[in-house]
Amino acid sequence: MEVIILPSSKEVGALAADAIEALVRNKPNAVLGLATGSSPLPIYDELARRHDEDGLSFTGVSGFALDEYVGLPAGHFESYREVIRREFTNRVDVAAENVHGPDGSTEDIAGACQHYEEAIAAAGGVDLQILGVGTNGHIGFNEPGSSLASRTRIKTLAEQTRVDNARFFDTIDQVPHHVVTQGLGTILDARHVVLVAFGEGKASAVRDFVEGPVSASCPATVLQFHPRATIIIDEAAASKLANAATYRHAYDNKPTWQGV
Ligand code: F6R
Image (tube, rainbow, N blue to C red):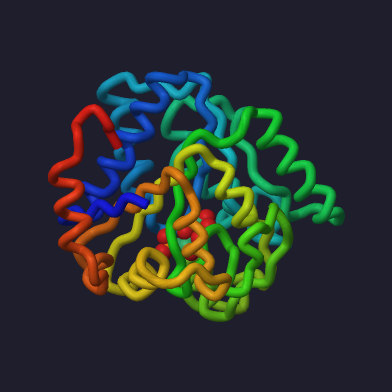
């Protein structure tokens, strides 16, 4: 696990965008794993800017959303398919048919989860998975207690997550109780994971998953098993790390040929 501490969310977004740009320029048919929520927004803003100003093209790229609410009708403003379209894929030139998300509006949720796993595999697997982390240590919507080997499936949101996400809805009662999420095993299959986090509110979760013992009680700790996990955070999110000086030293002395 590589931990990179930067001054602000803007620099975090730019460095994560560097990793994505390098991938897409090297592999124009790359498969991106797309997160929603606030954390990836600086990445999407920066990629949209590079598309507009530098001609960075995503025409061959496919995207797979990490998760989706269950029960929101297709096209709902807060459904993650719509959020990803609005915040990222509609702002660049990703082909609409190459953007995928788990189906949370079907009667056959189990079948849709199986189908989603098959679609990711058929695309060749995820090259780079963007992640945020919940205040309770979730990634995707793998809440505390999730199997570290889990695959795409339905989960019940922790009440803390519903409270955290109520800001996107008019009232907390509108936040669904259930979601479909890629599992922790699914996320581990991505060839590179890039997790971004900002602000003091994420400092405890960051400390726990970077430096704590691997445990289903803090699902993001599973990333300690990933051979290529890049954690890019701002100073506030890094403020509770015991070994921050070690991470800074390693990054300051990183061989340039390694890239992000
Ligand atoms: C979103 C997702 C979640 C969020 C997490 C942090 O697709 O899977 O794990 O990344 O809840 O949310 P924000 O970034 O809004 O703080």
